[in-house]
Image (cartoon, rainbow, N blue to C red; front, side, top):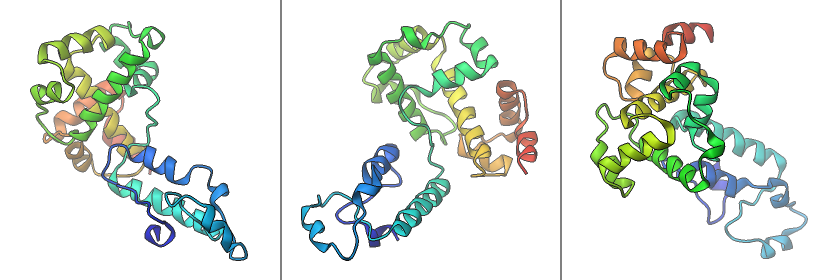
Length: 218
């Protein structure tokens, strides 16, 4: 369906920047709707835009996008600010881990962008059981020592605790959005091979076990 209604525009479903691609491709979709009775409009349209011949095609495209997002387990978080801020503001257990000291208003835009990029790197390897901090620091163009210090200064966490919070946040997202309903599948998807250990950590962060959460959504 997507290939049939796009012109010189493709969406890379494996890209961590997928949301930006989607927004760019279907921004203001009504502006891109044309009718068969006005073929001349095509000549004035940018080749990078998606052209629709009916509103039904818009609905079909949106449905297919949602299916692709669900099948690829893409996070729906809009990257306007770091996930850790939203998690912190809604979770008292995470607040305690961060010593109740995070104040997003005091974090500069430059540092917020740095945290967003850090989270993108973490999410891209979220299914790895042993995330290598040396490789992570290399991707962030800092030394491992600088990585530790900067994370501590901005969110009062060690890198491993930061990664753990994001792993469990991703796990909850998978459960909440019915992407996966097997505890073992969820655990493996976020880098935990020991399901019992994963359940213990999940319960510690959310005050509910993954099994209880899954059952509550059925």
